[in-house]
Image (cartoon, each protein chain N blue to C red):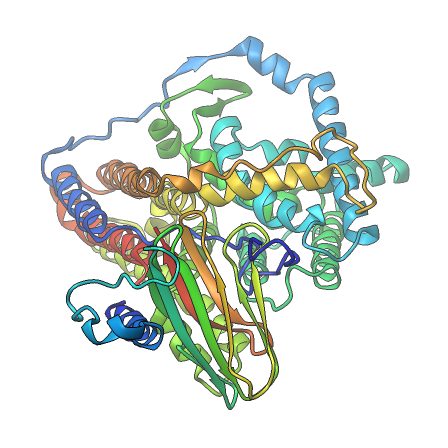
Length: 444
Length: 131
């Protein structure tokens, strides 16, 4: 008798997946860190000394723009996504409290992890199809008010800080919240999301979505690395690096990228034996350890990045914050590389399970979508070396793109004779982030 | 990881000595191999687990195993508990009564990193890296 035959589906202690990737082989760590270091110094010393992507370039696509912006296209996309979310909401509020309920995988795998490849491929799609925006629009239509207008102006200093804070809250739910794969807990969080974002939109108008919805903030940030760029109203197919360079990040973007990078690093950090041993033998509750650990990781990124930007300010004419904000875009490829390396097997394997479970949202034996009989193909797990290679390539490619983007920004922001001296701490810091990411995947 | 191997080695030697019969005196020297076997040449990883006073031993340690290698859990606990091994699929569960040494085993069928944990204490005992 196979030992698992009688066992029910067990809720894993940490996160949704019962399986994690094997540690990155140590030679991969060494090679990855070495490549990152060498490329960085090549970029620093030998690369262009004048900005290369002064214009965004690319190809204008007016017909595609008309299609994408068409009323019909948008309505169809919004209705489809809203319908999907209504099914998931039914599972959340009327489904059974079992791991086969699709809502857990939908939130932690499809929404959170799947958002990255979708934003890379499609650009800032969430802004267009967000079910909360649709809901707000419907409410405004009923109340006969203009969705753009609220009761108050968003205070100017807010920028994307509300989004950064909400992202941190989501990562706390994802990585710290006890019993996060139970319905009562997830219901509270879903309602909080709905209330904070939609009520905020009623108070501040539609702009609040871009400032505060964590999924929209994440999606638009990652989409800066997509090949799509708007100049004026026209959509252009561009070199992603040129698109990234053309971005002028606003207030709070440094917070957003710090939360994204810090939380992913923390996720890896909790797999180290040092962390498990220390937390489990401590008298301090694990929730406090994890909360502190998550905040410390985010703070480390925020502080180190701000210091490197402050160094740049010594050689330029603007203040440290201006440089931090301007350079924030160059962390996006590193964020994306981390996310791919950490979560792509989860997306592939658990993502399929969501499609299967969604077919029976209330746990009554239905097969609404015809996907209920699918078997999850987990054969990707049988190729650990290939998986490790993808992880290595994701992290190193993220680093190379980040280093190039940072160099481009530095030469456009600093006087030519000072650009090198101004940007080296930033490059060293990026090598540090990359090496840390590799070591954490090695999971000592 | 080295310590984990040491344990496995010790456990395997004990096993070999225990069920070896006349051949037991010529048990392989420690350096020769980890292979021991009640079931026909397959490798066995034996993990002795102690749960006492709310603490688990091993405490979040990394261990390695091969796909198809039998993993034996020898658990002694001062309170009733369940050991969960998230081996992919539906996972493996071992009921452990208080004070009675309990043994159970499972065989991982695919590579990956899996947690073996105490369900009641919500603590990770071993992170099993299966390759």
